[in-house]
Structures are given as structure tokens and as C-alpha cells.
Length: 355
Image 1 (cartoon, rainbow, N blue to C red):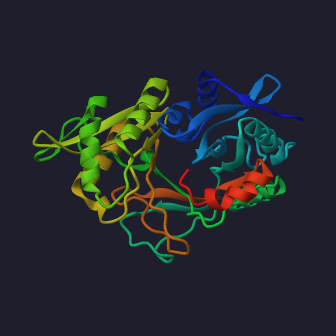
Image 2 (cartoon, rainbow, N blue to C red):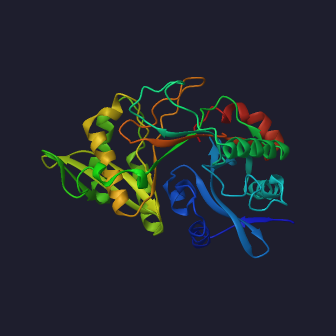
Image 3 (cartoon, helix red, strand yellow):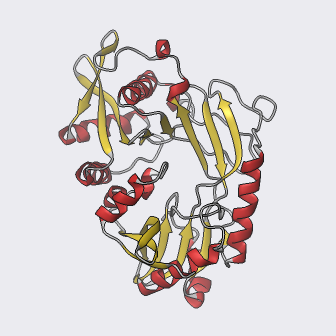
């Protein structure tokens, strides 16, 4: 069986995502509109006229070499990584036509990040000073089996795990498991004396951006232009509902953040914060409001920002201020030499760039 990869429209991509139980927000068409320095494209895998997989990637040109690009799939693409959906197909049957398509777009290197867990931690409590003894690895048989299967299939298809990269983690709060009594307030008005949270508009972005930057002076923050593009991309796509929460104290903006929803899934789009930044009162209030409003919107699982630990370090709290979460370490980012010569020459440079 031969699959074909070709560009698809935003409408086709949205229809595919709607047909799937779980697709990361980074793999929805509106997400692509938030990039300032990269072109984006949605692609679909077709078996005849039937779309069986889809993904969003960005093409990032190199300084002084704009016609030579790296194709990056963030948290994707959404294809049959394990062979459970189409067991007769090897992973090369999915990835080889993708490589051909990316070559036609001028890419010399491709990067993919399968959303497949290598390890699981269930009911991980961010309030703990976690160590190897404090948190039990779930090690579900299917998790280990799927990770081994995907690794073997990727290697057989000629892809290689990127070395020296930070381990990739994903964390989710299962809101359905939180008792209603744990919800902080009604999600509409004052949450502490002097504080109030409201839904903002794009006109509030400059004030919120300035407040967030002031609260986390030592951490790099996206530019205001990037915030605006992310808002417009998700809002204008009319698929992922996006909300700006504005935290005020005595009518002055002191913090805020974006969160998005697609069906029964939600995403907190704040930056991942290490201690002590994450214990600031405004951060705690915002995170509780995100949970409360998400539950009101019918969201069952909420993806939260994760502080990735250093290599060989113990697992750390993914996001202080959240209730117990399901934490997963993913199988990592893999790359492929779309154009072998250029890949060999430029890989040492590209691997140092934030793409």
C-alpha cells in the first residue's frame, strides 16, 4: 500500500483533527499562524481519497541561507506511530513520502516529535520535593511496549534520535478527577481581596505582556508581536477557542495568560516556570482560574506547562500550583537528512539553533 503526502487546506486539517480523539494544539492549523520567522504548512497522508494522517510543520530558513530550510513538526505529526491503526504498514511507508514532500519544499533536514510516552508518572504531585523515591514510575506494559516499537520503527526507517537535546515531557491534569469542592471560586469575579480575574481582549495584550515580563525578569519571554500572532492565529482559525485571562489588583493589571480549548481538551499557554517564579501569588491565582474556567467549558484534560529537568537529574515538579498530574517523558525528537550533503555540513550549526 502506498500513501501519498500532499499539502492540505486549513479546513481539511480542522476536519481531520475533529475526527481524532486527541491531537496536540501544536498540530492544529491555527497554531501555525503564531510564528514570525517561519513559513508553515499543513500536510495530509492519503490512502486514495481518504485522509489517514495529518500534521503541521514550520520551515525555518537559516541566516544567509534562506532557501535552505529545516522542517520542524512540533508534537507531531499525527500518524500511526505504533502500527496499531494500520498494522500492514511500516513506519517508512508513512515517513518516506513525507521526506519526498519536504525535499520539494527546499528542506534539507526534517525533525519530528512523536507524542509517544517512554515513561509515565501517575498522580504526580507538584507539591512534593520529588525524587526517585518520592514518585513511582507507572511503567504500564503498553507504555514500554509502544516506546520500544516506535523506536525500532523509526530506526528502521532511517531516522535518528537527536543527541544533546533536553528531554521532552508532557503533563496533563485530569480535571474530571478533581472534586468540585476544590474549584477556587466561581471563575468570574474576585478570588482574593483586592484581586479580580476577567476575560480580556487583544487590546489587553500589551499590559498583560508587560506585567508577565516584569514578574519574571530573569526568564526569556516571547515578544509582544509573538503573543499577538498566537492570539490572532488561534482566534481567527475559529477552531481552538482561545481566552486571555487578565489578573487585576485594585484595577491595575498585574498578570495574565492565554489558554485554549479544542473539544474536551485544554492547554495552558503560559511559559513553564521554575521555582521561585511559580509560587508567586499571581501565578497561583491564574492557574487556579484556568482550571476552574476549563471545567466550566467542559474540558476534561488540561495540558500544563512543564519544567524539563536537566539531563540525568531527578524528575522535578512539572508546574508548582497544579494538582496531581499525569507526567510523561516522550520518546524525543528525531531527525532525518532530507538532503544528505547539506544535512551533513549544516547539522552542527542547526543543532545549536532554537528552531
